[in-house]
Amino acid sequence: MSDPLPVRPPRHRGIYLLPNLVTTGAMFAGFYAIIASIGGRYTDAAVAVFIAALLDGMDGRVARLTGTQTEFGVQYDSLSDLLSFGLAPALVMYNWSLSALKDFGPPFGKLGLAAAFIYVACAALRLARFNTQVGVADKRYFQGLASPAAAAVCMAFVWSVDKAGLPGSEFSMVTAIVAVLVALLMVSRFRYFSFKSLPLGSQQRVPFRWVVVAVLLLALLIMDAARVLLVGFSVYLLSGPVWTLWGLATHRRRTRRSAA
Image (cartoon, rainbow, N blue to C red; front, side):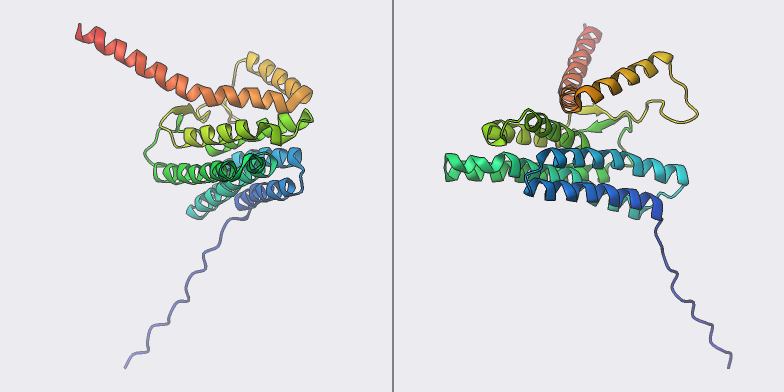
């Protein structure tokens, strides 16, 4: 009788440290934003969300540059995004402003809670839809407002008002409208430019004027980062509906001309 074949021990499946460490940093920034808002440090909370967005843009690039892309990293990044760009902005807005709606009566208090929850739910739906369309969607565009951009609009609004020394309670109704509007744009079918086709690689060249534009933007951010970010991301927020509706109108005009 022959000896039995040796049983191979199961292979240990590790994870790559560097890109997941960057993702963890983004998650911590989102977590810190929640803690800062509970403590009433709303500017710190808003800045933390922007730091999370910056790190979120880095982890994918780090993974591609180092050849360490994995399915684990993709799923981990999505969970980090839900915390940093879904739960954190909603709680910051609630602690800063939406909770003050209860002063108008119990129904309005529920409205503030509902607005914050709608934002979280739409961020989760947006991320789930994005994950299911990764292999088939056009990488040049996002379908619906991306969650980091949505969080940037909301946090730039919080940052600008708080920097002006105004209490968030005076903007509770405006905050509710902003939260719900941004949430619905996340799950909309409007197309937003993804900026993934821009020549940002180390081997790609750009015209000299783009360097000048970058310097001017940096100077504006140094002067008043909160308002510059609010204006910039608000324009991007509006670009989706305008671009999509303009494209539909142009397509209809071409169809009518061809049919005539």
